[in-house]
Amino acid sequence: MIATITPATISDYQRDGVVVLRDIVSPETIASLRDGVAANMAAPGPWANEYTPPGSTGRFFDDYVNWQRIKQFADIGLVGAVPQAALQLMGTIEARLFHEHVLVKEAQTKEITPWHHDDPYYGIDGIDNVSIWIPLDPIPQEVALRFIPGSHRWGKRFIPRRFADQSEYVDEARDFEHLPSVEELDAERIITCPVQLGDAVAFHFRTLHRAPGTFGTDVKLRRAVSFRYVGDDARLATRPWRTSPPLEGNGPKPGAKLDDPRFPIVARA
Image 1 (cartoon, rainbow, N blue to C red):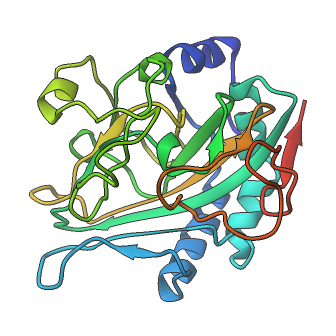
Image 2 (image 1 turned 180 degrees about the vertical axis):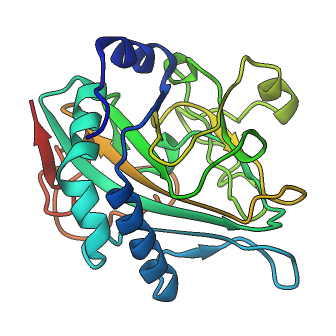
């Protein structure tokens, strides 16, 4: 690890649900993750998505849960600086890898990442969590992630929206609300997180966020790998829709801890 996670950084994360970690990723890590992303895009996994329609400019690709077959993701996500940073930010006894997530927007991609928070997409409940989003290209202001600070503490969860057409997964769901309008969310206080190589953005699963496309900018490539971690209070849960990633199959049942090889312990206090 190049930089240190300070108590002030941890406090900022707990308060805002998002913090930029400056100079925390080594050049070797970035090079390794670029190789991993190239391997992933050459051989996508079963849950890969292509959000750019045929005939349009650019490309918006994502994929996740490939760490067991792509060595570079396991090397970075399971040991070393990244899981240790997650443990410190969460302030928990243990940190488990939930999954890794690759996101790529090529030049002149029109598709945006709409306002959402990640928690409702996932089949887990718990407040102890963090995503560490590592850019593999410089991310200027115009294509940077946007967050609503403190939204992880609203006590609300919103029905997920499909990235392909931004439609809601369901019309109604117990314990989940409709996402406010774009105009209402854009009127909130927003933090924009431009980052350079070596930086990372850490954010809570319940922090609302969005990101522009690259269309109309000089950005040639916007690659990132997000490593998602959960802490001591994480429990498997059901949702009124298919979770992302799907968690069907043998193993712990809803309400149980994530004691499963799919979610390895990667750091302990």
